Amino acid sequence: MKVTLIQSNIHWEDAKANREHLDLLLQRVPGDTDLVVLPEMFTTGFTMHAAGQSESMSGASLAWMKEKAASLDAAMVGSLIIREDDQYYNRLIWQMPDGATICYDKKHLFTYAREHETYTPGQRRIKVAYRGWDCLPLICYDLRFPVWSRNIDEYHLLIYVANWPQVRSHAWKTLLQARAIENQCYVLGVNRVGWDDSGHYYSGESCIIDYQGEIMATTKDDEDLLYADLDQEKLVHFRGQYAFLQDRDEFRLLG
Image (cartoon, rainbow, N blue to C red; front, side, top):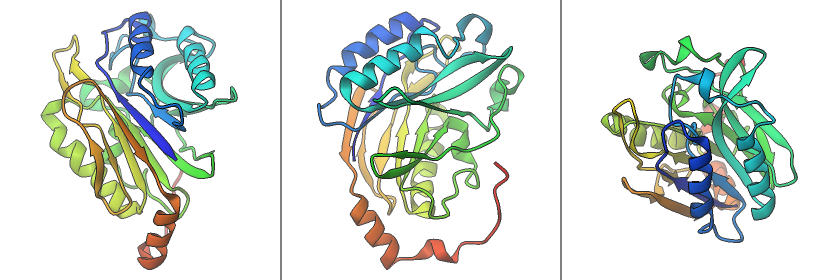
């Protein structure tokens, strides 16, 4: 599967400007890409002003994702602030090229930034079947909780969309590699760059990591696109040769 990660700056709380900016970056996506991944809250930045920045599931940003997925013939993945039944969610959207939409609501809300006071947590993981790949998409702070990412031979690809500040970038890079190694899967980590209006600096460092924890592609603190061609046959062969997942501790995830 061919993937493209878009590491972008984000205009603070300006969805229209961010969509227009991403229109320009999307022109660099190769025509044979299967999957395009955007950062967390890619239309607003990581804001707690949900009342003024949220959209419904019939809003302009989801419509934009549907249009782009269809025109690129590639799935579009990223998170938005969604309002539903008088609740606000940090919701990851997996937009299929055929118009189908799959959603995951962020489970682990970032209490350090009081995200839990504004947003409602999700309660379940989702596994997305896409073009022969089983994928688990998660959001930012979820990365710190390995049980929520745990692979029981359910998926080939783990995805994290994030707004992860530079001050904690060592944890970002280390944990992404740890998740790849312990779950014997490919990992995509997509972060933003630039400053937000809360005074946080984001250094990007998005990366594509293979099932052995080796970095296939990464970038620093500029806007950039990362590309990789993921090989499922090699992954399956590696798992067969080093069948570590079969020795895992048995327990059941409640979610």
